[in-house]
Length: 241
Image 1 (cartoon, rainbow, N blue to C red):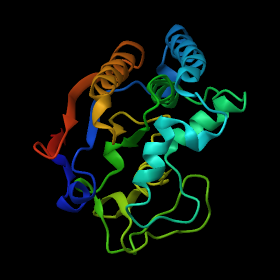
Image 2 (cartoon, rainbow, N blue to C red):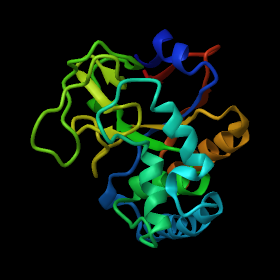
Image 3 (cartoon, rainbow, N blue to C red):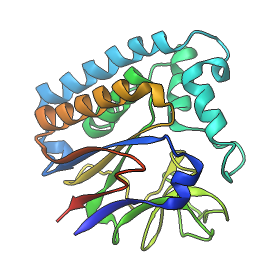
Image 4 (cartoon, helix red, strand yellow):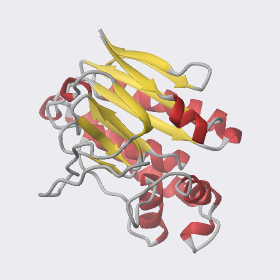
């Protein structure tokens, strides 16, 4: 059995945070996703690029509320210089008129949800994890190699990150995914995470995980093993048997 465990060190920093989790099992490999389903997800992504404008009331990215809350959150733990919440990077592209393009059906699905709701969304391959996945403040030195990089970049002391028994999975909370557990074209079990630090956006978070689960089930052929909002009162959930 594998679990997602949110540690006390996380809740001490963010007592009102909510983390929406969708666990999708038996996803189709990318090559087995029917063309009509891949096109349907691509259309969702295009629609979400357009819908993201509603969250952008200022041409200065940091002055938009959905970004400002994450800029503030990143002041509360140790980060690598220049690290930013993943949703800021997506919204910055929209602001510059450079829409987020299609990558693979699974990545397109969570990017579409991230853009539509202006919430950070990530995905990891459960089969590539070693032991439980934990979210908390680390003592540093966790092994990590970011996607697209050729050199290791271990975590810093005091950094908030996702990690398992083999090292870090995503650094600076939701900044950079690692190569080891990244979703691939062959991934069958996905751990999909949507994070919120704004208590007023509970309804948006619920809608986001519902839409992500629907996309995974309807277009990626997945069975939804679990769908839950993790809170301080319910800090642990099972993600695989």
